[in-house]
Image (cartoon, rainbow, N blue to C red; front, side):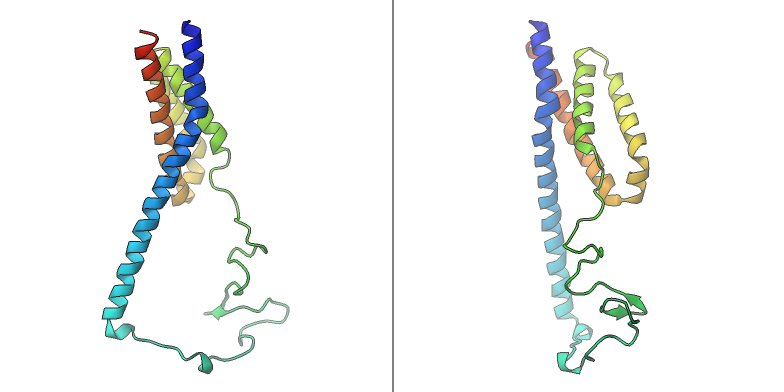
Amino acid sequence: MNAFWIAAALLAAGFGGWPVTALVFRLARTIDDRADAAKAAEQQRAAQEDPAADVTVDPDLRPQGPPASAKPGQPDGESVDGELTAAPDQPASGVPGGGSGPRILRGGAIIGVLERLGVCLAILTGQPVAIAYIVAIKGLGRFAELKETPVAAERFIIGTLASMLWAAGIAAAVKVIFLA
C-alpha cells in the first residue's frame, strides 16, 4: 500500500504542480500590472501638476514624408538621433506579424516537472539534502540566462519557489498522513 501512496504523491506533485505554478505566475503578473498602472497614474498626475511639462506639438507643423536621415532602400520609419526606429505598423522586434521573439527560459515546464518529482522523492525517502542538489543544478544550468535577463531571473525565482513548495507540501502530507 505504501507504493500506491508514493506513486500518488509523485503524480500529484509532478503533474499537479503545473497548474499551481501557472496560477502563481498569473497572480504575480496581476500584481505587477496593478503596480505599473499605479506608477503610470502617479507619473501622469505629476506631469499635470508640473507647469514645465506643458509641451504640446501641433500635428500640422510636423514635416511630411520620409525623414531626412532615411536612406534609399531602408523601410520608412522615424529617426531619432540617427537611429532608425520601427515603423508604426511593425513591431519593434522587426518581426513581421508581431512575433514574440525568443522565448525566455525554454524547457521550463519539463524542468519543473522533474524538479517537483525530485523534491517529492527526496522528502519521501528522507533525504532533504537532495533538494539542495536540485536547486544547485537548476541554478547553474540557467545561470547565463538569469544573468542577462532580469525578467527571466524573476520568473525563475517565482516558478522555483512555487514548484518546490507544492512538491514539498504534497510529499509532507502523504508522508505524515499515509506513510506514518
